[in-house]
Length: 143
Image: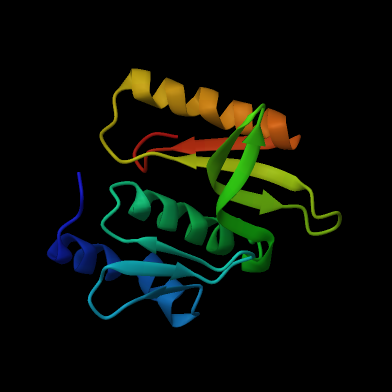
């Protein structure tokens, strides 16, 4: 379900988001409708997207908790899976050889077990197509 402006403001007030905004890893526009990721592919997304805060939280955790550099992280990047072009939520690149190290698949909070398993399968298909070493699937609540 899409977030209200009040819910968005509340989430942006958390320590993680305040730190991300202060360091300019993310920029939220004045009317709280879009988020800009200052990363490898400089992406802009709709903030009302139900899974966007899970994605933004994961992006910031990769930087602050796991010490990945934002220039080695791509958000919403196209992935060729067989004959189809899909979109990976987050890709983390190996700094040394620029190959994909981690595929991160984000889903909105509150999804059921079946939907989560579909996300796991989706992440594995992207990881296989990209020869990534790791996958991380999260709904913000479940990982």
